[in-house]
Image 1: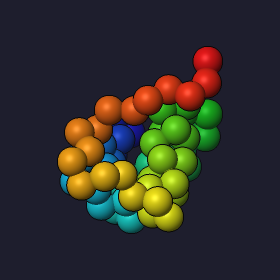
Image 2 (image 1 turned 135 degrees about the vertical axis):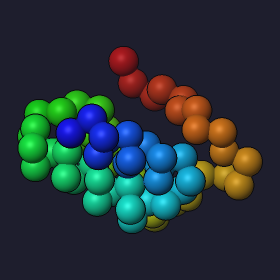
Image 3 (image 1 turned 180 degrees about the horizontal axis):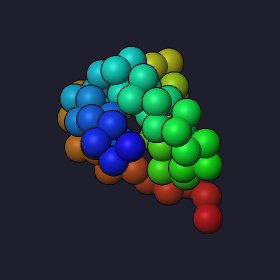
Image 4 (image 1 turned 90 degrees about the horizontal axis):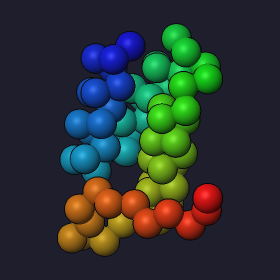
Amino acid sequence: MVEVFHSGLTWFEKKDWTRASKDFTSVLRLHPDDGPAKKYLQRCVDYKTKPPADNWDGVFNLSEK
């Protein structure tokens, strides 16, 4: 599971939302309550419709507590 999650992070950092989504979905099949995989999968979905700026450095601005 850890290897698949790290693979998802690699694709995420490369802005390949489709491949990252597949890896995070695979993690969730093994561990449905994995909070980080859920969060990253949601970010992939969001970034597919509204990609971050070209100079995006991977930092997230928190909008909720």
